[in-house]
Length: 244
Image (cartoon, rainbow, N blue to C red):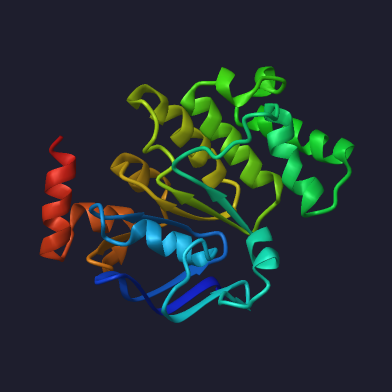
């Protein structure tokens, strides 16, 4: 199957710090790829380079046949990439319904009536149909993140990117967000998820990628990666995170 995301030799530095050091990664259409690794390993930087929230220094990124680079039509590329952030990035002055409907109106050219109809369906799908007239400040963190997921889905993207979607949540809210993402994983949408949640990675991923020091160290099916890790760095990482 052809790769919908094709990353070759990506590098990225911040001053003297090499955040990405020659990363190669291909993601097939409909695949769920979960990226794990210690803090500072380059996971979030990789995700952010795919939609150019960070500009990569070297290498190439292709999304659905379009080169992602300086001067490219980033609006067209980002239209196909739904992004769910650590912090929810909702508009505080807009209702939940309007937060979800806004981008399809502004970017896809939908009428407000059509965009709001789509938003209502998506908010019901993420369990928020009773909260559509509320404002973000009236919601819990878990509810706000589910609005963020609905907002990403409203653009009908080809790929969903999640950058540690539960890291800003209280522990009791993590499950409700991961449940929604797991349900999405069954719909055939292509997903890349950066997370510290190992149970989720094992359940939802087709492939788990372990990063350390800006490189991909090991990757494979979840059961293989978790039960029979080959690399010592991965073994040490799993011992540390799974012992808590």
